[in-house]
Image 1 (tube, rainbow, N blue to C red):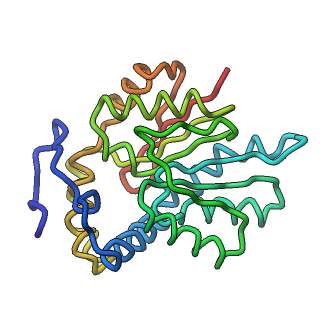
Image 2: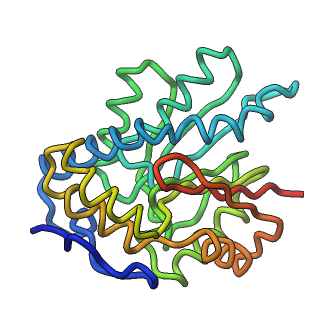
Length: 240
């Protein structure tokens, strides 16, 4: 299956993504997750998170800063963030959670290989009871999988659960972003699933204005959105 060479992205196009379909075999799923990890690396996702979290790490504290990556996928962002903190010598613990047991298993393997003390666990962000012992809660490439009401629910849960800060990194819905995903992804990975899902994800994504609106509906007053490399954006909200 191939994504259309172009879609009208002036409004959200909620076409289903293949990675969300039930019954996806393990090999295909793991291959897609690893491909997405490679795209995260090119987008420097963990660096944008680190820039926001670093000020907390620099302050004297009696305990480490605890970070939770929701819908962590293969754990690549969480592990890189933990590794960055480890190299800097700053006390930050980064854990992750995901609905997919395949993703959780792959993430734990990645953490063990990188020798970081990250813990990964299964979690349903839409229906589960959110943990309240993390200072910062982050998520990347998750919002566009959700309907508007689901996105508001997740943002509200993140804000209620995080002790200090919420960070959301996702795609920007735009013609440029769609074409970049449609024609650039085949150059980066051989995964047919990602070839289809990447532009589909852009068509499902929000604009910065839309994301701010969702954050306000979730009670995250004072939230800001900044543009990032590779047609992405990052929402940041801190508890006052």
